[in-house]
Length: 284
Ligand SMILES: NC(=O)c1ccc[n+]([C@@H]2O[C@H](COP(=O)([O-])OP(=O)(O)OC[C@H]3O[C@@H](n4cnc5c(N)ncnc54)[C@H](OP(=O)(O)O)[C@@H]3O)[C@@H](O)[C@H]2O)c1
Image (cartoon, rainbow, N blue to C red; front, side, top):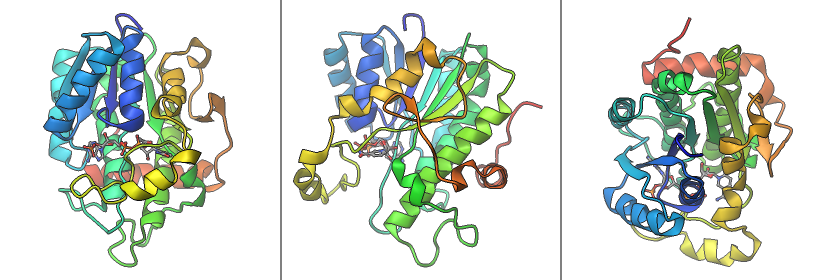
C-alpha cells in the first residue's frame, strides 16, 4: 500500500482503529477521520506505535454534522488530490432517539447520511486514483431492516434496533447505488459485515453505560483485528479490483436481504439522501 492514501472514518476505536493500524503497517498514508480531538489524538499515538508508521494524520470529522463533513472533505482534497480508498467505518448505536446537528435521527444520520455526503465529496480524488475504492462497513443487521419511508427519522415510535437495522440496510443500498453510478470507471464500491466484534459499539462515551453488557458477551466476540480483516481485504487485495456492488463476509461475497437488492429501494434511497444532505452525484 506504499504511495496509497486511505481515509478511515471512526478511526479512533474498535474496527476502525484496527483497520487504520493494519493499513499503515502495510505502508499506506492513513487519514484518521475522528469526531473527538482527545480520543483522536490518543488513537493517533497508539496507531503510530502499533504500526511503526509515521504516515498517519488526524483530521477532525463529525459525521453528525454536514458542516464538519464539508470542512473535512475540503481539507482532504487540498492535502490529497488523489485518494485510493475511503473506508466508511464509523457507526453509532443509540439506545434513546438522538438527532444530529442537522436534525437527522442519529443512526441514519451518522451511519448512512454522513457517509453518503462524505463519499460524494470525495469522488473526484477517488476517480484520480488508478483504482479507487469505497469500502462501507454495514452489518448482518441489515437483514432485519426496512427503510421506514413514512418516517425515516423515527419522529414517532423510535426503537434502537429498527433504527440501527435501517441504517445498515441503507449502507448496502448506498453501495449498490454507488457501484451502479460508477460503472465504466475504475472506482469500485463494496460493503461488508465485520462479524460480532468486541468494541465500544453501543457504549455511552460520556457515562460508560453499556460496558457491562459488552463484557458479558465478550466470550462470543472476535477481536477488532479479526473484525477489520474484511475491510483491509477489500481495501488492498488485487482479487477484488474489478468487483463492485457486493456485500462481503469473511472475505467472500455473501447474500443480502431481498430489500437490499431491490432496484426501486436503491434508487429511492439515493434520491432521498441527495435531498437530505443537499448534494448531488457530481458526474453526468
Ligand atoms: N462491533 C460489532 O459487532 C459490529 C457488527 C456489525 C457491524 N459493525 C459496524 O462496525 C463499524 C465500527 O464499529 P465498532 O464496532 O468498531 O464500534 P466502536 O468501537 O464504537 O467504533 C465506532 C467508531 O465510530 C465513531 N463515530 C461514532 N459517531 C461518530 C460521528 N458522529 N462522527 C465520527 N465518528 C463517529 C466512534 O467515535 P467516538 O469514539 O468518538 O464515539 C468510533 O470511532 C460500525 O459501522 C458498526 O455499525 C460492528
